[in-house]
Image 1 (tube, rainbow, N blue to C red):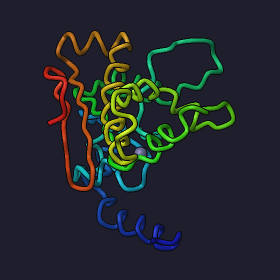
Image 2: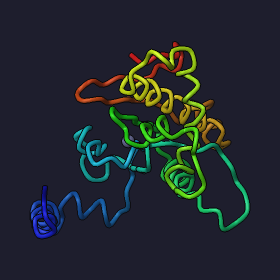
Image 3: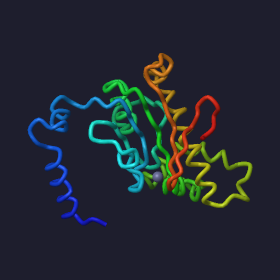
Image 4: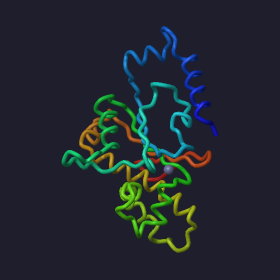
Length: 207
Ligand SMILES: [Zn+2]
């Protein structure tokens, strides 16, 4: 694992390779970003979207949170801090991204905590409160709850949460409008130790 000095050396190395007069990086920074793709993913250190997709600077507008969830559209009083909705709003209405990807992943700690603690999801933890967004995903376990292993439950709930987040995205009026006009495309992805699957909104299954 890198220490702080190694990380600082990493920045110096990045700067040397990318930040010189007339470089593509400097040019993009001075003109302002114009990414066509936005990704909402988990904060988990193993699933950095830029690393997984081999994307470079300027290519992805990224928001990461616990379990990569999108809450429903809930405009309300000031002093409610909708970090995720704010980033989505800027990506969609400010940057006009053409693709919005929700990326779930294998062995997600957020999903695991929800499965293990869902009966006591409480008020004392920000994580527990945040994971309430994904609680409807637990319904997918109803029929076979007793016979499934925790790993299998997690896998099912991870994918169900991606579908849930896609549904929640459609509750944002400016997203629904763009999707219906065809100027914004929503995608649901799941990545688990080398196995990638993509959700087909027409068939309702991951392939
Ligand atoms: Zn996760």
